[in-house]
Length: 118
Image (cartoon, rainbow, N blue to C red; front, side, top):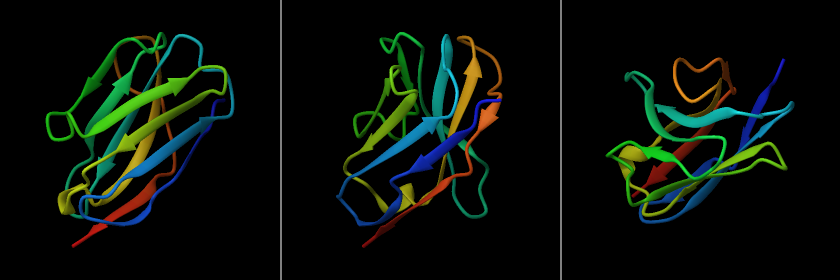
C-alpha cells in the first residue's frame, strides 16, 4: 500500500512563497498526483494535478498563475510551488494519488498546514 507524506507547510506572510512536497512510499507508475486543500468550515477543494508524464497539469482557477505543480518520478515525489500567497490560501493542504488519468483519488496524505498572515 502506497503511503503519502506531505511536508513544507508553515506560516508565511501574504505575497510570500512556500514549496510543498509529497513523498510516496511506493511506486507511482502511471499515477496521477494531485493537491487539494481544506479551509476551516469549507469543503475540500481541488488545487492542482499532474499526470504521470509530467507534461499534463491541471489547476483550479483560484491558483492558476500563482501555483505550479511538478513531479519527480525517480523520487516518487510531487511538489507544489506556491507564489503570491494570499490570506485565502490558508488551509490544510493534502496530497493525493490515483491510479490512472481519471476518476477518484485512491490514496491521501495526512495534510500539512499552510497559514498566510497579513
